[in-house]
Image (cartoon, rainbow, N blue to C red; front, top):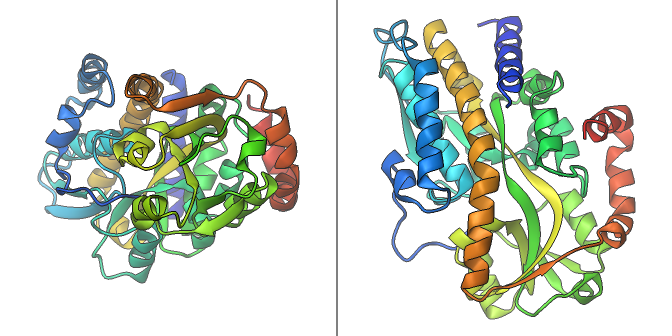
Length: 375
């Protein structure tokens, strides 16, 4: 399929979304990796989630006929988080819609809870070829080193003032360019749609009541220059720890804290070893669902159309459930005794991150300003 057709399809999907209003402690027992696990999960209100699915059925009706007789294909899909998280529920919804809209000619084999490795492990495997992993839900910033340089702008501290600000970007004319950048740069993957998993906050073993309490703490970071710079700017010591080792690193004192979206913080049982959460909201957890060029080009045109329609519906679903799921989890954390601290004045935090913002946006100053102005 020619690049021009792909770009057109992506643009159409994002515009349609706008018009419609729209890592990890290893679990004691392996998390379920089929779509049914998400329907049993408590992270979002079951009625609202079911309503979203029902609303999408009309859109999906009749969409499976064209691809139903196409060659059967199974796509291996990696997810680092459990299926009861916001991203896990989005994965499961996308799987359901792809299989429905393709008339069963596409099967998504969803492997969750990090069984296929960390996000960087997954990206390395996808870019290495061979088809062992075809698709994944990836944090947008993780693509920075894999041909998605522009995606770095989505992880700049304190860029998005609220969720609507992010979705103004995600449904804008800029979004398809960001999604296709890794493909255009020849790295062998492309984005299908955007979503988000909530604002990211710091959590610590010892109470943190303000910015000054972070000073000197060892805070876990991924191997990301923006995250390193932000933590240094806040007066703490960035410490690289693999997500799969974070629980034990907190338990043994290798690190004093880390940061995650609220739903992931609870789902990965981090409150057991770091029961203090400060709601600084330094970044919004922008996500992409990506597919290898090899897998994409192995689909028929009808199957690609079904995939893009499912992408549009899944993005809308993610937008509907995310805030409600996050608020529900936060209420549960408070009820369970988590020490939750609100940040009423973010100005000192923003000032502390000023250098890392300037250093990492200078190359794309005009583009970054466009994103800032979308609030």
